[in-house]
Image 1 (cartoon, chains in turn green, purple):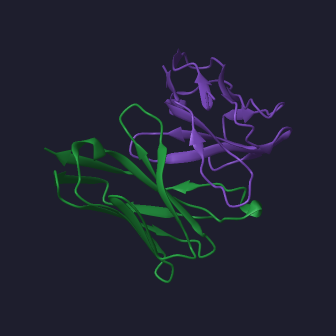
Image 2 (cartoon, chains in turn orange, cyan):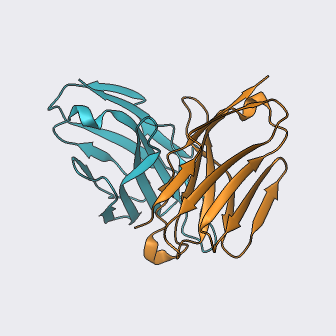
Length: 115
Length: 114
């Protein structure tokens, strides 16, 4: 089955700096890679995702890059703000009915943005 | 739409007790999932369902059971609760349209087994 490794487990940055979180996956057939943000005591919420037919996707201050050859993908947050403080999870799955779209999650990164 | 709802929000069980965690969605999603979240361990899939009457095991199914009699509801049953089942449980759902993959999560149930 799929295995997703996520690094670092904790990340502390100053407000305005950039933050990068990296994930690797094991199943070369995986082709859908979402990122979820979970604030303390809240539910995970999708913030951005990428499919294997593109190498990069941006949405305002966040971006995700994918390297299929190396089987890794990264989340980039620019101009960080205190409200970006949360746990971020990467995940991977095969984009096919045969997989039933089961997500395999990384263990999460606690991002702290210091004012 | 209420989205994905879960009850209860919190529960304390004694070892050996049983309970059912409720999950419901009003988005007519065929796919539903149960995850548990332990500190520092991400989310692990317990059971999932691709439609009413169809369920299957995920990564960590031992000690749990599910049923899916309707599209809307996907309850998770704990029999003979153990301290190892202390966790936060999230239910999620997604629609089955081609090209749409986002899973929507419920607010979670925090369970403590003492």
